[in-house]
Length: 288
Image (cartoon, rainbow, N blue to C red; front, side):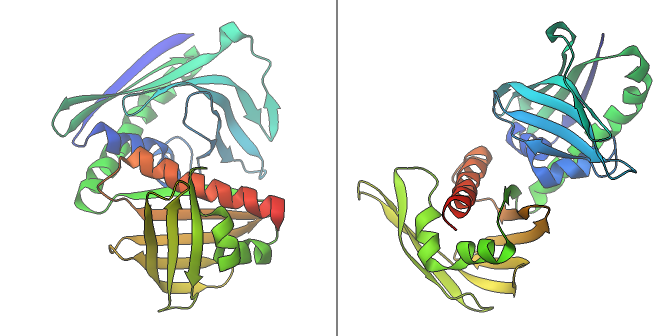
């Protein structure tokens, strides 16, 4: 096994570059350099399983079976590659000593500039290919990260639910269901939800801590509704959110993209919104 290393200077902070690397939509943008249609399935927290995938000409999955060996936001990610998927068939027969590592280091080198370094284990036969594509992919990471400085940062989260679209839609939009799942942690809940699901209509979800010390209103106005397909709305602070529903084998895929705010870190926002979406998926599959 050989080791290779690539670096690039990006005019953006590590938090922004981290988001470019790990956000599912942005990931698809910069990894098309390796293979058109690339995507990942899994998480980026330490210990998470993650698969790096594409669809081949036979409409079968191909890619890497991996796990996150180490994750230190927003400076370091270590990926341990455990095996392969070839033509839809998984192979994890590699010995532990044969596991390859792919590491991303994000070093803040001044107030608003990051050195992004990739070092990885690689077999001899692939060195020439990666010498060509990794620098191109890093240029794309640079482009996406620097472009984010001139517009609102958008964060995308996803989930899959093994229920029919009608059930998922009603669970996501009806007030009596929203109050059951709309919280990011067990010390919060949603005591009231008012929802007028029409274009130009609005919603007002009350969010409160279990101990009763803190509460606020999460409210906005709908700008576009396509039943069973898409919900677009604007929050009272003018941030835009788009929720897409797609029918897949065995259920529904949901993708939610929202404008980040400036109070919490990008990671905190991603984790909070993802936790709520995961609660929705769990509630829907267990109760509807």
